Image (tube, rainbow, N blue to C red; front, side, top):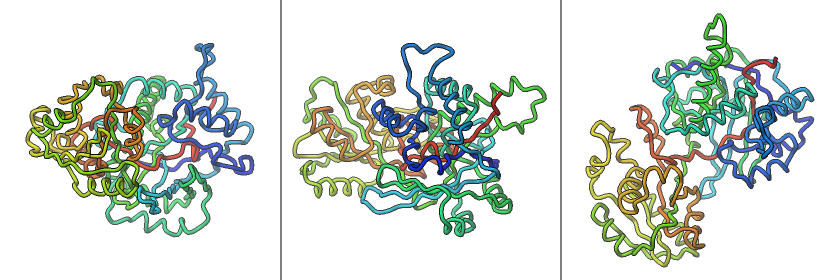
Length: 443
């Protein structure tokens, strides 16, 4: 099953970079144009120049965001900004962060290389569809730089917490890297170079399947890059570095593992009669109106708690004004009519499946293609952000969701299903720039 290996990572040299936050960035797909500009200003060596460089009208086949990334990467290594560790290591990577209630959480995990396996092997299990555009973009970057700048985020199951017990003493020493990011996130890194301890990582993961939580495009790109180099390698053995990719591993039983909900904003539709919408929705849902003051934090907290308390098959609809409506599915069997007979129940009865099929497509008429292209629909992560979208007139309505459960991710992935777009948001995001894996050596 899963095979992992230590590696000699490239890390920012702390004697050269006084403020490590200034060179870090979130994953490329979380970086807006405005954030890209901000990251460029933070530091001339910010990792954004590697993972998501700027594009210019004058770009051509010889001078573009990918060739510039390769040049920056080579220059920073030559100048000692990025330095390769002398010993192969597995890197413990913990993240301290506040949950939505403001309580401090700690997500524990580690970084290592994973042997790439085709999905058909059942070793690595996806749960999301991917798009060709982002995969082509990541492939061009990988070809130019021969490196993993950002890890794939995976989950494994170990209810015994064997590694956490073994690694406790490592976490008691001063971290090798400590980065405070976005004000309330604390990212901590420890090198583990002891061969005996590294074998414990390998023994634990050997025989376990891995579930991709985040980074589906990166994993599929790594597979494509492996195949690309394999076809160009004489005497291929399967042990070449390009058969491995940088991955973050987290125990899905970890109490610090959080999946936040992704809410939906609807905009640009013809004027909607709320009474007619609720009447149509009542065919499949129990509709419960509730008084609501959007400007009152106590009222917002109560709505969030009520929604969480209702559990599965429920979401909230807010069209503006002084009421919010909880919609709870009457009969899960109705979902059978929207999926092929062989589709698993786990996929059919996800809250996001129910919302998208019965409401967004059926009642509001937003097609699957329009959803994929985010026409008439916007996905937002914050509960209050979704409500503001309606109050400020950017959206006609908001659908407020409970988070998809980790167990649902595992169940859908195990049977080879793919969740609707934007079903999960694992928080916090892994920082790009903590550790870099160089796959191929420079010519």
